[in-house]
Image 1 (cartoon, rainbow, N blue to C red):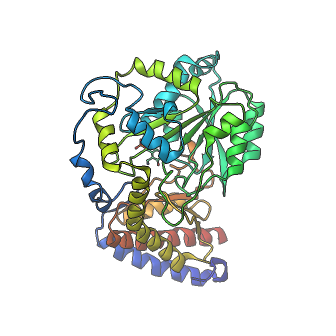
Image 2: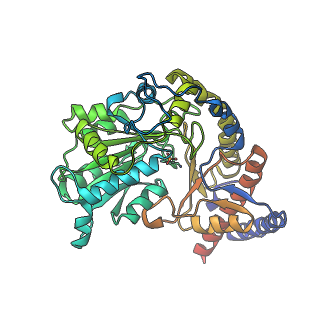
Image 3: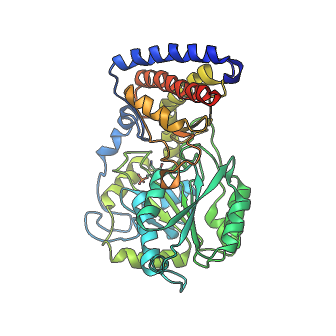
Length: 428
Ligand code: PMP
């Protein structure tokens, strides 16, 4: 398609008529396709079935019986495996339960309830009428925003640029406003655009001056080993924070949700020594220990970080054709049309697409009418408010290749209809 501005109004109206006929035809197919959530496909899950043969044996290397209570921080062999994989000190890792999101929620809750560094608990500020604030690079992950919403933390959107958040803006705001207590970061293959943070951004985050002594970075490295097209390195934020004189600034999160089985994997949190001590104190009132048999299962199945990387390469082989297909269809149908721009991720789980201003909601609604469920427009912004109503998150991993092809055909049709309608209406 030529650029939308190169068509006359008559031509656009004719196109719209033609596209509407195609849309009505598509509706008759009664399809039920889903590109909404970043879930692995059954094919990917099948590649993990070996995990269920473990654990074989239950005695830990230090003689502890994994079937029984205890070991709050997680079994040493599991902390070592993930420590090696991510370049983290095993002594500064706690292995959690089946969800890193759970650890994020709990960690922030602890700050809301108990506070840290001798500062007031974060929820106090809310009772006094001026809630604490988090910086939220946008577009971002909706469940991070949901945590803030639930805990009464005010969200300030910050643009996510090509190599991380707009650091000029971040540095100025955290230097001047002591009520800004945190920032969300998905530093590799971010959800939804696939942004990877540069070393320079990591260093600036680690060393910036903050008005709040209890300012924290919530470093959600959910896609830390999830390379699809290219292996992207990531500077170690905990080391950078230590070097910058702020050893307790960052909480680092990771999980095997998209390595093994989502909802049945293991998660981890890592941070500086004081934070870990504090966290263990709070956690010990919450649980006697997480599921050691599951930790052991993961250790016995993978054995080494190299095996995890090899497993991710095998998963990437399943994912690549799906990403290829989405990108190819977008390129064939929308490149140069002026109706949309989209990301070209090197890994992760999503492709992010921006429609013309004011067209994302309409596009998602149209797609739904034709049987294709997408992540709700606005979900990638705090309070579900995309100020320009442009961003749509495409999750290509779950459908089969055939379903994905059918879903993309409809999606593209909807992007075109919504975009052309808006151009035609503007001309009125
Ligand atoms: N963080 C990000 C950025 C994610 O995309 C997801 C999964 N969609 C999660 C966390 C959830 O992780 P978990 O299953 O470990 O709770």
